[in-house]
Length: 328
Image (cartoon, rainbow, N blue to C red; front, side):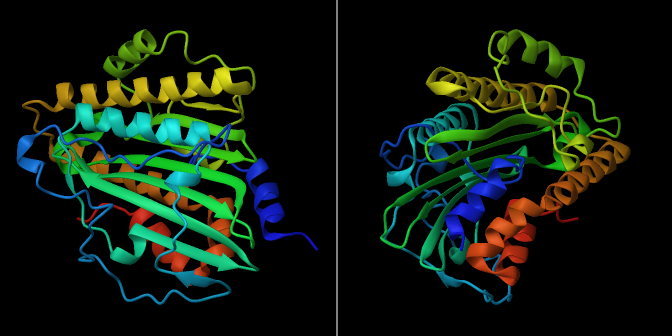
């Protein structure tokens, strides 16, 4: 009989990364460090990943084939592999430097959760913020432990920036980054700026800066094919690869940092003094809804979550946190 981890590994080896969590390479403990808040007026607020209110709590019951625990003494951060930890730190560094982050209320039972099935445990930690231009900035880290409580070798990172469609219009794409690591080998790594326009094209402003900033960082030995659902939403600068060795893992971390930084810069530049038209707002809304719908079609993501947390909890998690549509 195949173990739970073996089934998850088999699914992930053939799975697209974008739409589910994180990276890895060589195991190394990393410390928890939330982004430094650039604006002094936000310094007093604890990051919602550490203090959440539960204002958006829903009534769904977390039941199914797995035992779900609201907390666990197993720290995700302390058990991540090198690339996952490095990428998480890089993302948080850029966010703290480039954005004025405000707390984002998240149900307490979604901040940190552990799911157990057949003795194996999956632990997920979520950090969320918001800004004047982004309705939600989300980082998800996950790792798996075997029945003995040891790290099993499966790490995941997932990060998405959801724009405020009514503020920025369709000109601002969605930043997304996902990495999956199996036994210290990164099997899938993706970083993308998904266009919100109807023609699914990045603006010339974005592509020009992207090509300048990311020159020399986008070539990898093992590119991967974009999954069918992703072909409807991913941009023409999407990088989806299987990094070969430590050097390419470091290159991918650097690439993600540069793409995220230019995205934050371009968002600020293009929206300064900008007021979108009604049609622009509608186009952005349609684009973001399509993004969430197509990402939710990733059945491998759903099956992995259902294996540890059950059907009801997975549906709630995917529709209220991973890929929640804008409220209109």
